[in-house]
Amino acid sequence: MPRGPRRSLWLLLLLPLTGAWGHRGPSGPREAAEEAGSGRAWPAFQGLQERLKAASALSRRYWALFRCRVWPEACEQDEKTSAPPLGWSLPLLGKQYLDILTTWYCSLQDCCNNGDCRISNNFTGLESDLSVQLHGQHLAQELVPTTVRGYLELPQPDKALALSFHGWSGTGKNFVARMVAENLYRDGLRSDCVVVFITMFHFPHPKFVDLYKERLTDQMRRTQERCPQTLFIFDEAEKLHPGLLEALGPHLEHRAPGKHRAESPKTIFLFLSNLGGNIINEVVLNLLKAGWSREEITMDHLEPHLQAEIVASTDSGFGHSRLVKENLIDLYVPFLPLEYRHVRLCARDAFLSRELLYTEEALDEIAKMMVYVPKEEQVFSSQGCKSIAQRINYFLS
Image (tube, rainbow, N blue to C red; front, side, top):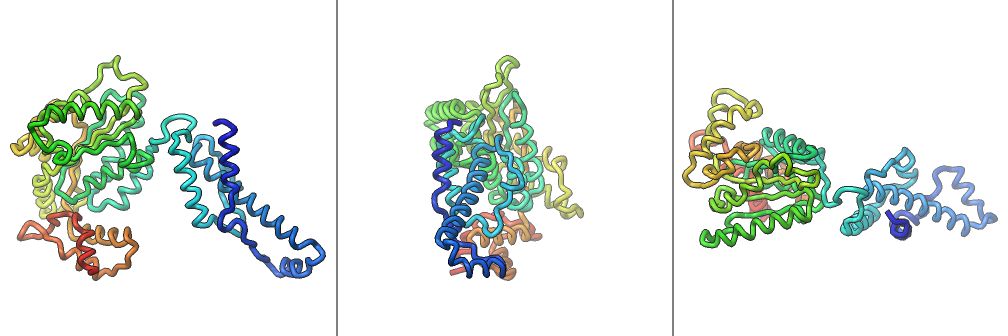
């Protein structure tokens, strides 16, 4: 990086920060005695000297943290820079200042020695977020991070990665898609490299399918031109017009050996669909009745039934498209129906996200507001965790 910008940033980091200029006070009786008898030792000069030392130490600390954020490859922190000096810690305002400065600087897309700063590929963060925040979906927690990481670590993949999420509404499909975006890209769903299509919003009228095909193809091409790694999310994928599904085929098919060059963009497609949700629920219910625990359910139990249901569906063209017939979908991820205990966890997370206090009784009361099916067993929430936030508002009113 040029010397000038770094010098300017160093001056920015020397700006007065809360916690830098405050006198730490005596740390023991000896210091207190010396301080009390320092009338002959230029107290004003000593105070200024201490403040300058504190400011210099704080600035060095902030510079080390800032450097590690925007130039991670060059970051070699030793024990001195990894721990704050004794007597103070980074104040909240200072942390916010550092976040603002980092965001501003990286928005110029000049904060990496190599690569694209818009792309973070935080695989560890993705695994952590899904394990902590996603409830009742052990298959998705295992399959999604592993598959995404394996694809993005390939030097020259021969096709785009296509994952198809299936399950009832409210089981976590959109949540997982958002977690993927937030951990692969600095700006999450707002990134220039991420595009979300909602079928009934972006492609509502079948008579305009030719126009939609042109716009879709053009937007995908432009996104791939400006980003070396792109993410396309199709919500309500089962409602996509057959013509649009056909238009996606060339973007998902295998490239000829000579065509996937080192600079070819890596592309991930996520298709989110309610299609197959009923058969997933049926298989899970039968296994639970047979004495299986939920966590013992594997892809071997679900995948054959799910794929057969998708192909046999007459309500959607998704299963009859070339994406399915030509095996262009790399993985079908089943999202299991959520039970009472999972709804309670969703309610707890909703309280915590709004920094509200809650009781176990409150979680039970909100979970009991949901409708559970089948009518006889009443095992699964018919809406998953959807509308939990609205029910909390009703509960608090």
